[in-house]
Image (cartoon, rainbow, N blue to C red):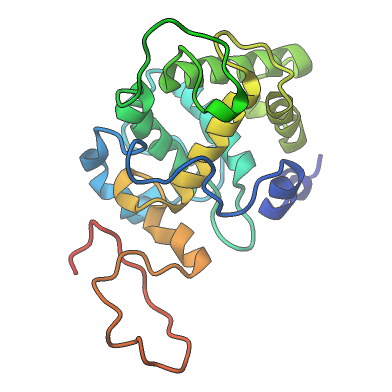
Amino acid sequence: MAEKDKNFSRRDFLKTSGIATGALIGGGIIGGLIGANTNKQDNATDSSSSSGGTKEASSSIRGLTFFKSMADFEVLSQATERIFPEDDLGPGAIGLAVPYFIDNQLAGSYGENSKEYMQAPFAQGEPTQGYQSRLKRNEMFIQGIQLMQEEADSRFKTKFVDLEGEQMDEILTAFQENEIKMRGVESQFFFRLLRQATLEGAYADPIYGGNANMDGWQMKGFPGHQLAYIKDIESEDFVEIKPKSLGMNH
């Protein structure tokens, strides 16, 4: 497959997989999503964290807080890049450091489900009832990533990270369509969780490890966290405001 076909636009994949650009599915960023290790990612806005949507980008000098296997982290990186790929609008998930955002969240209260009731008995719930698995999110992610690797081997006889873009999409779509058997959770639920975390990592404040250089905000024209708009509020012209992170000195 030609390289240009492998790196087709973000809008193409968002449309075919039912993802609304910029929509944060199933709740906000602030609250339960924020892990216990957010203060370890103060360098999230450093220029070294934004290295484009290449397979090598995820192997930067930034440390991992949850993943013990770089192979698993690379699978996560490529999966998020397929959900939010680099295109002419700006960087994709890897360039935005989304995999590091997810790694950080899985190591904290979000990944441990520490703010949710996780005791037995476990009954089969309805999709409208929200989180119904006995698995913690970080357990779910590890299982899902390992199954992506297994699917790549069984379908294409190679590693997930070595697949062409359309082949990765085939596997991700199988998860989305609930065609993959998972223990303790439906694959459709895992895919939705992965998609949600990818979008949140692209648009969350950089202090949480993603949205490198605030590029996600800049693509949207979002001003971030400003102290006030009093000097611009009465302007009749459109005002472009340079975004600010919570971690920046105002």
